[in-house]
Amino acid sequence: MDAIRTRPPRDRHELDTVLRTGLDLIKAVAPDLRYRLVGTAAARLQGVELPVGDIDILLDRRQDVDAVGAALAELPCVTAPQWLAPAKQYYACYSLGGVEFSVSTVEVPGDADGYECQGPGPWRHFVTVALGEHRVPCVRPELRLTTEFLRDRPDRYRPLLAHLGAHGADLRLLELSMAVRKVPASFRQLTRELPAATGRP
Image (cartoon, rainbow, N blue to C red; front, side, top):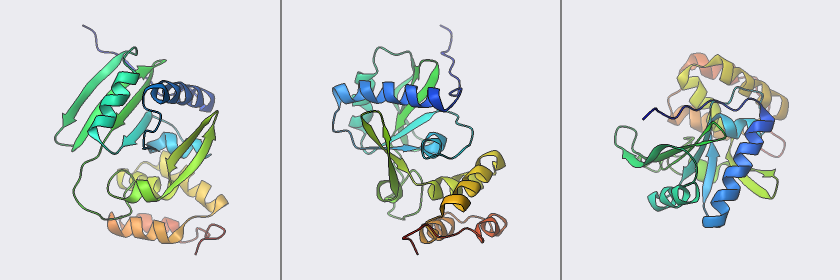
């Protein structure tokens, strides 16, 4: 059997449409699901003009991944719910209109704050964005920025820096994240001139 191929969303409109459709399907089965939108899709939904690779939803429990699997059972399944030992994730992936729509836990021990997808960071530091009838909790762009620094992807971190430069950053959170994740000094230098977001130190 041929592998199911997926592609990035073509634009912001398609990202919104695919995400809203997925959340509609999930809400019908798991209306009280606790989740965070992470990755480039979370940044784009907050207005950052950067390339989006896929839609990636972080969940708290493996049973939630299974519940989403049941909700999306009619979609083409790229990867059925399974444990990925090297990544310490319980993960599943589907094709929604051709776009990759994945859900996973990240089960890395520790309570260090400042990570995008593990520990308390994504659950404490998020922005809620209205999307149709949904209120989508998106991980803060400061946490995505440190991920992109560590991946050394200038096509992603430059738009994030520009967005935070225009709108202000949670400087304490950004410093914490860069310290905890051991971001190299060459990248830290790029954040020196970022202004503080209104109401944040």
